[in-house]
Picture 1 (cartoon, rainbow, N blue to C red):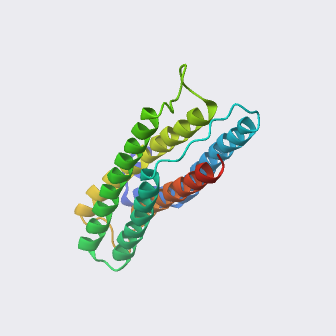
Picture 2 (picture 1 turned 135 degrees about the horizontal axis):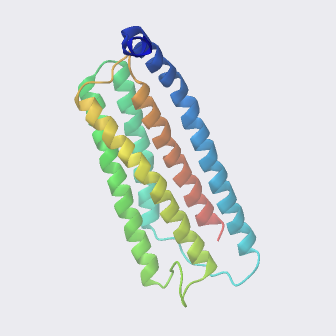
Picture 3 (picture 1 turned 60 degrees about the horizontal axis):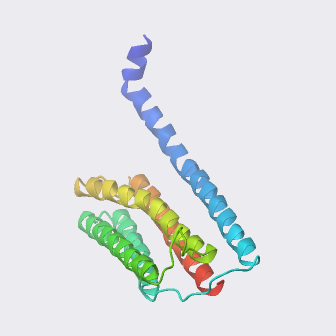
Length: 199
């Protein structure tokens, strides 16, 4: 009897509705926990900087370019979501594809910035390391880890858009991906400004 209930279309529809209803609150809880993580990390940075033996170095210019890239990716993500609300399947796919490509460009720029720091002996650990450089690189790597989740989410969302899964009546998956991607963008802008002005 229980198996028949679970197999019924009504049960499946109710279960899906409940899952959809819980999706956004769960995402916001996850984002809140990440905000707490970064708040703790940046607080540790400030406390350590006040203890002396702090190397001051210039932030590579390519990080400025990467910041512009990721801000642009937020615009294209907004465009994709707005297109879904207008049932424009082609523009949804184009918006998501451009966003994903910009995500990879961002990663490339970040890598080039890290290589520039490495060439100047700004390293994570070892004899040449300094706490300021270690924190800077830790911030970049930690953001990369969060960004990896965003790129995976974008890829899945893009594949679904190719199958025309998103429209005015069904934007939840796209909205979840959009919220997380915008969070990553805001997070990087915050980190960049923090690292640029608090050195």
